[in-house]
Image (cartoon, rainbow, N blue to C red):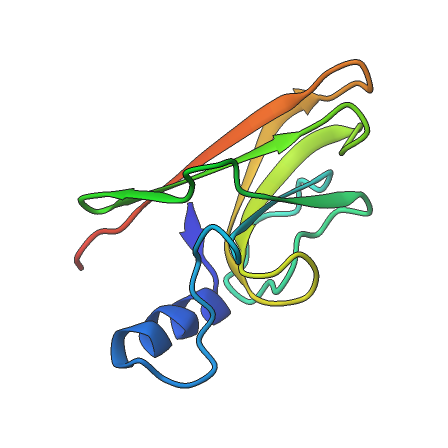
Length: 126
């Protein structure tokens, strides 16, 4: 999952403990889904779809294991009932910073379904 420019800045803020950094913890981490297949750009600051929905973390998430972060959110029967073509990780329920975004068709969610979205972000040294 590709990091956005603003996501990179948030990582750098965290490393030095800069004021204004928002931790991606159980209170501040959100998964968003949208209906746009617009190609990823590091300059994106939000999902590109005309339909987009964010949900907070399931209990016990996010998690870290070695160089991976795992985020998990539940989209209930009244949430995000449209084609899922993109998803992202955010540090706020609205606005805030989109840390990463991925363009990927996950199917079309119906109002009779609840979908559990799990996103794994892997960090790698250059």
